Length: 180
Image (cartoon, rainbow, N blue to C red):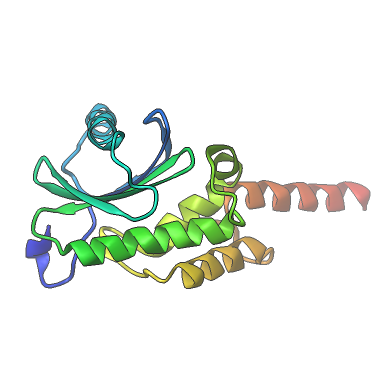
C-alpha cells in the first residue's frame, strides 16, 4: 500500500479481548476481502502474539508480510497493521495515539466491559485516527478531545451523531411533539 506515494498507510486497527474475539476492528485494506478472511487473520495474529509480554511497551512482529505493532492492557489487545515496507515508528505512533485516546475516553479504566459500554467512542476514535488507510492524527489527547466534542454536540445534524445520540434526539423530539 505504501506504493501509493510517500504517505504511510495502515491496513487495519484491531482491538481484541483476551480470548482473541473482536471488541472493535477497522480494516482499510482489501487484503482480507471477506469477513471469514478477516476473522482468520485476527485469530492468526492473536495466536502468534498472545504469549508475548507486550504489557509495558509495544512489541513489533512480522506476520504474513505485514508489520504488526501490538500492546496488551488488562483484557484488551491493541494491534495496528501495516505493510512490510511501512515504518515501524509511524505504526507505533498510531498504536500509541489509539491507546492514549482510549485510556482518556475510558477514564483510565481500560478493560473489555468498559470498552463495550463505550464502543461508540472507540469507533469514533478509530475514525479520527485513520481514514481509508491514511493516518490523520496520532496525538491521543487531541483524538479524545475530537471524539468527546462529537459526543457532546447535541445540535449536530443526525448524519454526524452516533446511533445512541440519534435515538436520544429522536426520543426527545417525539416527547416534545406528544407533550404539545
